[in-house]
Image 1 (cartoon, rainbow, N blue to C red):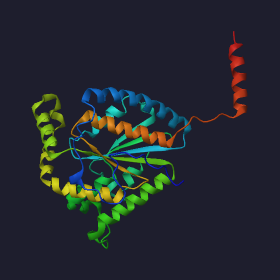
Image 2 (cartoon, rainbow, N blue to C red; image 1 turned 60 degrees about the vertical axis):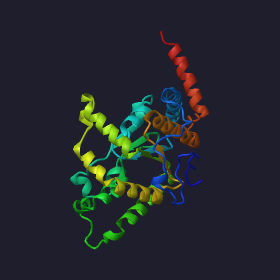
Image 3 (cartoon, rainbow, N blue to C red; image 1 turned 60 degrees about the horizontal axis):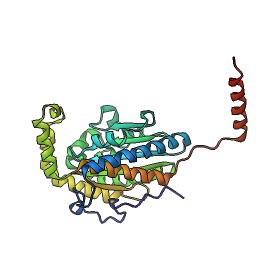
Image 4 (cartoon, helix red, strand yellow; image 1 turned 135 degrees about the vertical axis):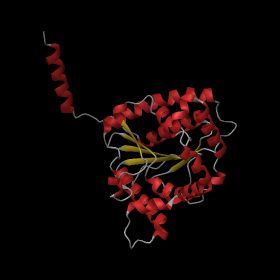
Length: 293
């Protein structure tokens, strides 16, 4: 087997390139559990995730990489916080990728995220990722200038080349034991507006607000086009995308947690079996300890 097959799910995006942003729901179906039930179920799922995390760490053979991408105010931070609330902080790492530093610009676009990949036995979380290089940089191509790309490189095909690099990168990781799960949190434009207004009106949330967030709304169609292209180009069995309705946060968080649980079930991490000689040493150590005054 080359890599772990991803679990099937209603929100898993197909691998055949027929994904359409316009058909992707931002609101769950009417049959979805209400917010109170979602919160209750989330606590139950987190209990099971905690056990999976213990086994992953003890086994020390696999890693899990979670990638979160979304428009501003979709709920990436709160979802990551909610889903990891019951996990051991020593067993996972969260990295947020914003404007590249001068050092990062001196390397290829995958370098800064490659440095932050999870070790075996750990969960790595990317709050934004290398996909920003096919999103915001595509919407604002002037951001390519500071990257000092080779003068001979043709920029007309740069996005397809980057998609190819990402596919190869993710497949390499999957072949070597890093299971990749990617979440696109699909917030509607109207709901984003409501959340921005809420940040402005509530003093405790004003620190979250940035004028640039509002300015970026004028590029909404361009971002949706970029999301559609990148998801179709990079949703593969070794690194699937899940498009999660994000207009109801409790439902979104529960859905993400359930997908993680299903993924862990496929990974099936196990506590290592001890050598019989080790058991003998344990018995000897026990006798020694019990014999102490």
